[in-house]
Length: 321
Image (cartoon, rainbow, N blue to C red; front, side, top):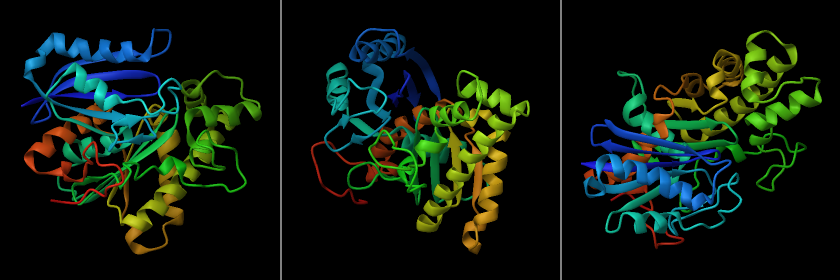
């Protein structure tokens, strides 16, 4: 069985053809900026996969999208794609591949599911996994007892919008002091600029942090401390085994992960919190695509997809079958 996986990010669209065992048969990626309408970019990246494997061989579609989103309605409103507000993404893909099931979840939820399925170390039981994407924004997703937990609206696990600083900056979501206002790439760069750093972007900030620039290092320490508080809050609620961190900012490596682990260790008071493992994604950029594929593959096998809302059931609470 082969399914189409689609990853809708803030700066690019990616797609892949994925088999039941996780083998990626074909992959395509198209940047969003400097191109035509977003819908055309979506059709282009999906079309590349169809051209490579043939539409008749694709048994379904799994989508991981930046949020907010509504899996029941099949719509998405990514903060970084202003032209898409309540955009009917599921319907758009149903039109491209008619007659095939289409499942939608958040990009970080798909990353968590992909890591739980194929990325976590063997011999380390992980019934409760939090996936965190640190990039243009900060997203999160949960896998609980081996199943993705999306919640009644499909937005569970959105760790980037835990309020970490009640007197902090205004977040693009409209709240004040969200984790994203400190720990996202653009937020880190803005803070560094106000403190005298003159580089261009988060990648340059990471390079300077590795080189020992004090402002760049402090920007990562602030982000790590804020992420640690949010991770511990989530772990206290859900008794997590494992946290997997991915995204462009997470690619900075030790300048993020060392202070993140130190802050978690310093503030994990209860015993069950101290067992928490925090690792970078082992699947890299494929984690979200593999998780998106799993939304369909596990639905059909009776596994993880039982907690993925069906489209057309607004307000309903998905239950395990």
